[in-house]
Image 1 (cartoon, rainbow over the protein chains, first blue to last red):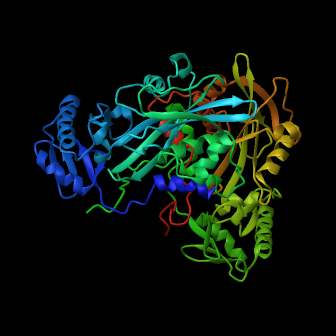
Image 2 (image 1 turned 90 degrees about the vertical axis):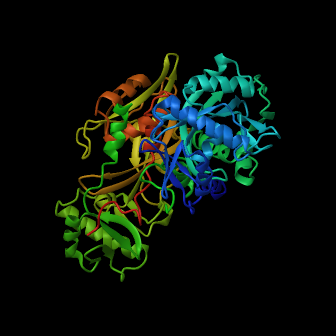
Image 3 (image 1 turned 45 degrees about the vertical axis):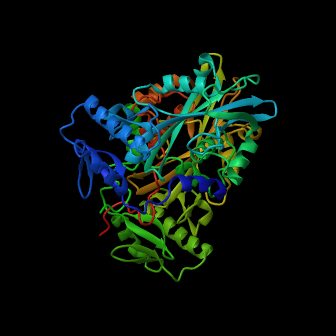
Length: 295
Length: 295
């Protein structure tokens, strides 16, 4: 099972660089790489840059004013090619859960600000006579991240102010043409979390996980161009892909491992079992739990 | 859901007292309350008591010699009424997983030595036309711990050197007269963990969790005197008991909460959802992760 655990380790690498706390009104909402903080000097009416932290200017007050200012910054940085093009998906900037958002920032810039990020991943499976099968997607080749990699049947980020239920139904329709009445049968089965130092910044992600049992005659069909193809594989074969390859998008491996655990595909007598169960839920790095030695 | 979280909090109280590390061969295997360490002065050929830690005497070598010495201590302490009567269930003394045991100590004394403890809890459920129902047991009134409290259908500690599968089949037979062919259908679905300062000592417990779907006509029957009665309740009613009462044995609440999460009974849009999901799996307090300020 060490072959499985390596994916958990890859999603939670050691934090061996400095990130600056980013605060809104003294609330810690993110972690920013010093090199990115340097770029924010061009916006000194929006950010108050200190040696040891980044603050949103205290003159900016209220959800809308703060969000508009961050929107202007994100637009400018995307225009300069520093961050990817805007995605028009507002992500919560929050010291705690989604419901505590102090403002929003476009998804394209969110990782650079090291804000918490929330997503939903759905395991679409079929209970066939010869055992469980799982629907996988292959990401389109033109996707910015992990082009061509395997993906869970439905997976998407969670914009601010959309309920989990509404966003899931939307993603089910867009990614796999799952009709709403079927999508509503998706069972929320928990969540996984990880803290990943990535190229863009410090990711502190939560993925809400869902199981959706599908009729044998259902065939997913992509409608938004994000998925190149779908395939239906025996769960044992999916497990082997996770175990032996890096074909899956990084965090999707964890979603599959969680599915395999919950459905009894792992032997709990194995010494690695507890590492997998515990490793899927990492305490979120927040205030007082600093990711690295701050200068 | 705060009404649910209070059980997780109760299983993980703040550690505000000093425990002494207990080492075997420099391996940290447990945490001992100083008042209990004082009692070990009577066994100075077995323990090497220091100001800041307790060591098993280095002259004791090998699994058997160490286990025999600890057995003598446990017998003597039980005889003096300091610990409960011996249970003849050897518990692993280990710096890591069960497979790394350096010796064993009787279950009756294990909590005083603050060793890791492993158990198995099984959710017996029925998929009826009107929804899921769960079998609960009520603990016999003469049980040492939590007499008369509600319990999962089958639950037991995990003695050293028994496989999870063998012990589960044994417990299923003893506690609920589940025939072996049915017990083998139990699905391992993960594990929960907590670190609890209890009257006896510092508990660092892992409970392996199982779901067993039962035929509608199956009725559990206790054979070992540990269960006073069994009852079959709609899962919503079981949830209400956990939410509104303290009728369950403390850690069984967590097993039920895990079941409720995995089967979609909680709304993930609730702000407490992530606290519950994350709270069920506490990092184990081990070396370098000291429970309290050690003198």
